[in-house]
Amino acid sequence: MEKEKQVIASSSPRKRKRRDDQEIPYDMVEEILLRLPVESLIRFKIVSKQWRSTIGSLYFQERHLRIVKQSNIDHPKILIVSFDSQNFEFRTVHLDSASLRTLNLRNIPDQNCLEASENCDGLICIYYLKSSIYVVNPATVWQRQVPLARFQALMQNATYTRETLRDIKPIPRLAFVKTSCDYKLVWLYNSDKYNSDAMSPNEGVTKCEVFDFRANAWRYLPCTPGYRIFDDQTPASRNGSVYWLTERYNGETKVIVLDLHTETFRMLPRNPVARSHPDHIDMCILDNRLCMSKRKRGTMIQEIWSLQSSSEDTWMKIYTIDLLSCSSWSLSGIGFTWVRRDVFRPCTPVGISKNKEILLTHRYAEGLVKYDPQTNMYSAFYKELSCRRVIPYFQSLKSHI
Image (spheres, rainbow, N blue to C red):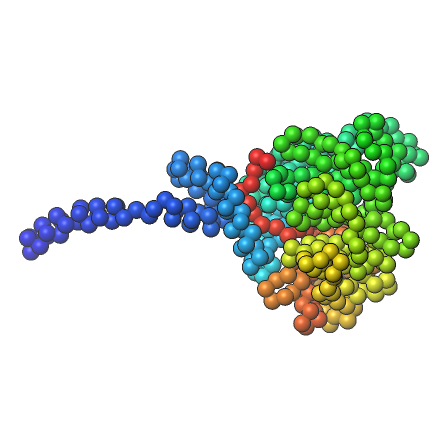
């Protein structure tokens, strides 16, 4: 028995040594790290200097971003941006599981940031028309303050009277776009008295300012559209192009496109909702395609059209939603009701779940509705009175742009 113990005791160190020698190759460790969520990677930076260096490298972040984007196709998420007197609150929600995760951004000094852009590689821009602009990563809590656009500075320095205040029109929302080599902020707006600027190369119908992150400066584009832009809209963007609705011309609403690779504007040759008023139209990106929605006047019937990737003049109707015919029309019993302005302004499709249900929000977003086209029923998905914006989203490690 004693011999047996000696054999076991003497063999144990050798066994332990063999196990220690069988370390996982570091390239395999990196492959595992690439498939972890952002919050885990942030914690794992303290494991070792090598892990910290790997996770913080631009090469790793770009590879992680590609994997996250692909995963988001199979497991779509949305970001709900809320605001109270203390901080911004970001909630990420899985469309299929409805699981909720909350992130707070507390250290933005200007509490007047009331707007939020679309998601751009896990980054969003939060801003207020008259004061501040911040680019933030809700997952890592990284942020960067951006200098004011030229028209913001002009608005701050202007002297207003009761008469001039009546003349000020809303400004279309900011676009946050990735090009092949950089990120850009784009603001296209109509030329008016309050934004007249001697520094502008073009005092025509519209003006366009572009922010270059590398130069840390705004600049005017010299050539801009000859059509006035519809004021109350959120531009849509994909693959380095930005889309805006015009005001009505000769009974038609047109779509203007800015190609940021060439910094030139063009008009879409046709769109399926041109005869509708821009107040009854919504634009968004769904499944990486430009989509347009229109609400038929006096009804709750909404049509959603998708621009086919093969051509800029081929559209396909992908959904017709008649909310009045839904068997679940009234949601007031669970704290959700459609108000009057929801009736004539269309909903915005935010995402499509695996079982083909459509998540809808509204221009005056205070909640989310999930619509099932197979059963013609919809249900309240999320209700939040302080909700500012609902956007398709995925987390990333992106920072220091």
